[in-house]
Image 1: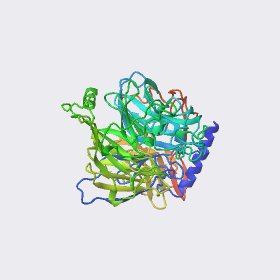
Image 2: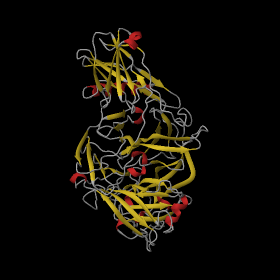
Image 3: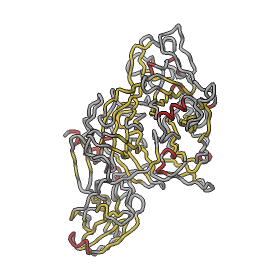
Image 4: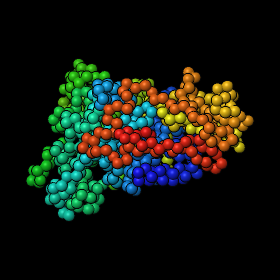
Length: 624
């Protein structure tokens, strides 16, 4: 109860502050991050891809989950405290995106083949990793899964694999590591704390580890193979790593994904390397990048380091993020194994393509003047194996100084056939910029969001999404101006709004009707101030009514009749079934996981806002 009261007070404060600066009359609590489209390639025949933009930008305070259309109009914003810490710690939401989950069992014995919104929420340290939980939301924006890994899921990765499992990153603090051969005293210590970056496979249905795959860097990658010294470590910039507050993060795993052969591609930022790891034994099969140092036989007993197994310029990246396979959709495990063996008669002809976001900087050190996206071809048919840069994505719109010290991602839209595009989408991480390119590397568009130096985003995605909220449209009435303002947070099917007026709620069906096209997030509609009441209905492209606002007074906007809630999109899984936020995977449920607050009903600057007030407390699930 104390948390509920605190959440109510915090949301009320946020609402009061936002009302003074929010552009939306119907939802003054929603303050989206602004866009500035700084470049559009008018000479290119290729336009931006279809779909929506998904981001969780971090500004002065975490602002939550945001979906925008291609023109920068807000589609959905969730700033719920469920996803944010209130203790002042560096926290927020990360890696917000749609992902398809296909499985024969959703946790209740039913099969599932549907798209969900996924995100990580918890506490992130200034060192660039964290501990928290993974959330999965359905088309109605309700949480249907809520779980964590053993020792807590890290911010960097929750990737749903094609076999229905998922992989997440985890950071474990290990004591007793001898670093005297790596750095001189006082930085090198016989009893040092080291952060061991891990990738762990999860069963989504239960939220538990599969016990099939757990890779931890200390068992395979020597601390002597990293160019980041104890002195440079984010967690111990000039302090010996001799206590739990100053662990040495020598690998910094920041992405992982499973291929059709069952093996994992894992990125180690601080070793400037990408590792291909056996999904059965968790042993490194090969490495790509700059991990060239060898273990010192006279020093501590570290595992052998892993220099690159490839020759060529495909090794030339540093401080990278987001290593991904591309061009392998629909291929079998045998197809991948055939390519790995160098078989030129297979469907991949002994070659594979991967992408990385090459930061080329960590802030305190850099290897270039700008960050870039790389498409790299690995050729296993050659001896030695070769790695070649096929395309580099950089300098969008002539901006050649975009050097991001952290975060970032590269997305090939061809990996998502529903988008109908071969474009490449790239986010510049801690720089508030994202850009779109042709497959060949020509820039199409550049967007700056928020304020430089005060906004950043871990990853940003372009994707299709069908949002069908189970709430009602929100309206704000301004009788003096003769206008009603309507919005429906998260709805993607609305094409038109229908304004209906009458003398009372029972006469609406035969009252005055006006249909207007939906305009951005909020649409303004002129009203006749003679009738007593009004209601606004959301219409889809076929003219079907999706939902209706409450019936409200034209004079003062007070609620005089009930509306009609939206209906969640049909799904192959029952959203009320399965884990529903109770999976623990060794982590247990959040204290706040069963609480949701939906706010409605407030007057601001003479304009009546018609929401309602609902406080919903659920056991084992959340309404957002």
